Amino acid sequence: MEMESEMERGPQSKQNLISENDGSLGCCGWILVIISAFFSILVFPISIFISIKIVKEYERAVIFRLGRITARKAKGPGIFFIIPCTDSFIKVDLRTVSFDIPPQEILTKDSVTVSVDGVVYFRVNDPVASVANVSNADYSTRLLAQTTLRNVLGTKNLAEVLSDREGISHSMQTTLDEATDSWGIKVERVEIKDVKLPQQLQRAMAAEAEASREARAKVIAAEGEMNASRALKEASLVIAESPSALQLRYLQTLNTIAAEKNSTIVFPLPIDIMNHFIRK
Image 1 (cartoon, helix red, strand yellow):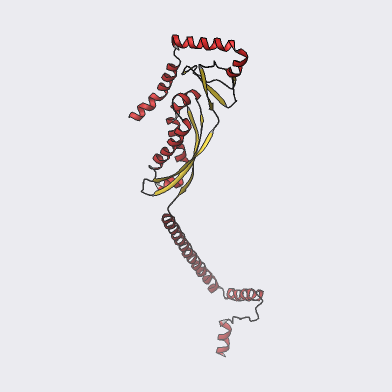
Image 2 (cartoon, rainbow, N blue to C red):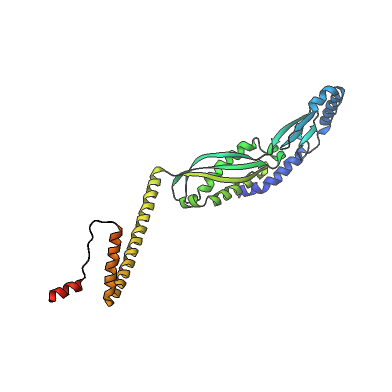
């Protein structure tokens, strides 16, 4: 319940922090700003090189004036001006960043230890929040990705880890995106790279799969023998009804033997002919 309340207060606290930073500089602050601007005008040819700043297309600048953020929106891209002595700025890169999650030793729900690693793609969605709400958004996101991977996979069975990688990746992305929203981070994609099993478990699974294949092969061979015996039974019934069919089978056998170019040919002698000579 406390985590849910913190998540609900996340966007609100972010807005409150920015609104507090947008407050007045105070009388002394404005005096310092005016004095700094006055001296910048006096030494204009030199101060222009200090006041003009340029940020690239994929960058934004968060400006601090006397320690306060000047506006809710970051400056850039292009040219912008700062007042020397009172203003400072921090550049924020908006490009998508990818990093590898180091292999994590995880105990699954069915008490199997596996080593899992992955890759995360994220980018800065709100430059002001990424500077004001977290000290190091990149490093914090990396640490959070590691703990999220362990927490998500800890609720899965080994079969689910091996077969449902897409579902695990989507669950991790949703969790990370919600957790880093107050930091101004947008998690675009999470992928599970590799799942490493212990050697003993690999051998056991291989033996199980081999035994399953052998069992299926024996069942298929038994079914083939049964079908062959039925076919032979039907053929014997046909030959018994027509004696000439047996003679045709003899001739077909001789043709097959002659095609193999054997030096010796065994000629099957019909039993009916032998009975004829025996009677005489």
